Image (cartoon, rainbow over all chains, first blue to last red; front, side, top):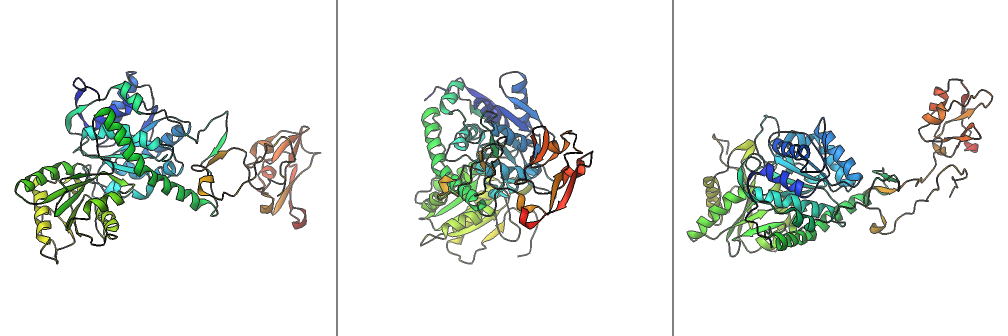
Length: 399
Length: 109
């Protein structure tokens, strides 16, 4: 383990990701700026300009071009990075499927932001969660340190030969991208040791010409999709292995696909995704202090989905709450749908409740989480409790 | 299987082997180039025929043929009918009107 005492930086989430991309020695960066992601693009262009990052910085005219250029660069065997948010991420959508289907292990940062209309530059998770089927590995981080560490880990996971799948590192817009925190910056030599060289089996190479990205008839298409699915499942052990390797080298561990916080012997467990986990941690500590058996389950990966880990962690508790900074209109929050589908195979599955909120940048406070826990504890004795509800509404709604 | 590779200027063709196990598929849609799997002769309704008397070897058809079915044969534009889908781009582009599109005879494909 390294002595990090002289490597402490006071930086934002965006800047932490930029540092990580430099440490990973990305060779091509193609990105288009969008709030609240802009700073990561600015910092990387400065690093290329001042020579501290030996990379090609491609100024592209749109997000669609940004991902297309990243695919092309990945196809010649370059380690690539892109970043986007909200409308920009949605404009990339076509290319996201191309990147995963072509097995190009691109790493991107997404600054989670709400989707228009109404127009808003502020955060929720409706952009990335609407892309769960795009074939990208999706990780959500809690703070700037985790953003840095996971960006480095993301390259290792994405480029693992049995995975070869792109990774989207999600930071809650503004809450993480713009908040300044102390962050340890690993040493370059150590990151070099940690990250193997990227070798693609799908290299566009004049000496060994290959036909890349071909069409298939109905006779073979499904097999390629099956392979993608298998590769995503292969990422489950790869994520654990990479996290263990990272922990032994850098001393920081994130526990793979989920993190259980005081879940042991908890009657009520709240499932969170992203930065709100930090707030929920404090509330759980407080409730435990007052003898209430509360726990927190921080979901880290939405794809691959931590099916087995979740079942194991939630099998013993009676009540599960899921916070969603998302709503799939006409149904429920998407995180909730995913959590429920894996719990239904338990012989005695806990009762689940969905709390939708924090949309369009609305803050989720300690008080909100306390209220949610209050409702969850009450639900233990009240079977008629509402299954899906919006919290912290500003006005009365039809009941 | 039809042997399309009768002309030495065409790259060697690797016949497509239907994989029997998922691991036999390539990782993503990629394979060594020149792995043509089938000709296009069956697509043709009209067949381009080059009138060699009118042809001045300007090579416009050779450049424009979308399937590279036209090749240089002793400085004469020649069509490999195995890969000609009969699109007619060559006939339309020929400045000498040296290429006619003739109704395809089913028996001659």
